[in-house]
Amino acid sequence: MPDKVDSPLKDERVTIYSRDTNFGLPTLKAVWFSLREIWFYRWLIWVNFKKDFVGQYKRSSVAVLWTVVMPIIPLTAYLFLAFIRALNVTSGLPYPVFIISGMTIWLILSEGITSAMGAVNKERSVLTKVKIPLITVIIAGYGKVCANTLIRIPFLVLVFIIFKIVPPPVTLLFPFVLLPIIILGLGFGIIFGMLGAMTQDAENAVAVMMRYGMFLCSVIFVMPTDGLMGTLNRLNFFNHLVVGLRDFLVHGSFSDPFGFIAASAISVLIFIIALRWNYSLEYLVREAL
Image (spheres, rainbow, N blue to C red):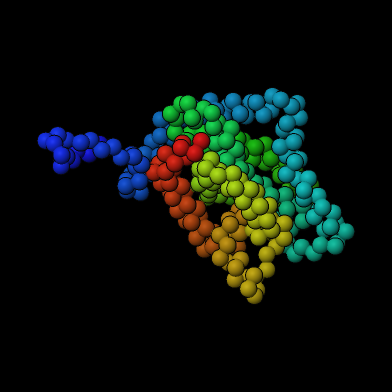
């Protein structure tokens, strides 16, 4: 915004222009403005989502199959080790149910982050030419993650049927219980999407974290509850989300309700921080594009 100052040389006024960063806005106001942008540009989000989603499945006649199979292929090694009893998993569930349900939940988070980063890079040329909010591009990319999850659900139901797992009726509320991890994935997607636009190192770092993160979140194995690892595990809110969602999906209850509630609260906080950074620091991302 221009500021008027008195010139020491003449009886004239000098106009000094400073960068309008929105950084001084209160957090709640920045969050409100971000949510208002999402609502105002909802038509653009839908158009971008539809374009990407239709394009993904239009290019391949078996794209739906790949959406289900590709995340499972890396897990076949663990399934084989469990089958020959070289891997001892004491979760109280058949191992295929344990690992496939865990991976379905984990992919909501991991794909949410990677899809947000990919959406920003994909629309880089558009963002440099058209002044549209960055968050609309990120949410459109995240919408594809939610659609892919819906495609994987019938396969998960089939696995439950094969192993005779009958969840209680309360699990019909599972889509609502998923909200914390959806919010967390979107929050981290916004943060890392902005970082990925400014530096390519962010994309490599995220790939490593997602690859090894699932080993620390009870996706592949049951995490220990004793010793140092047990203490770290209790502080790992990602693990509380994955375990809590799997427990609710199978049993209709939480083995650690307090841990799940605390992890959900942290997820909401991260989402608020992401909206705040998006509205305040978007100018940095545009300069880096």
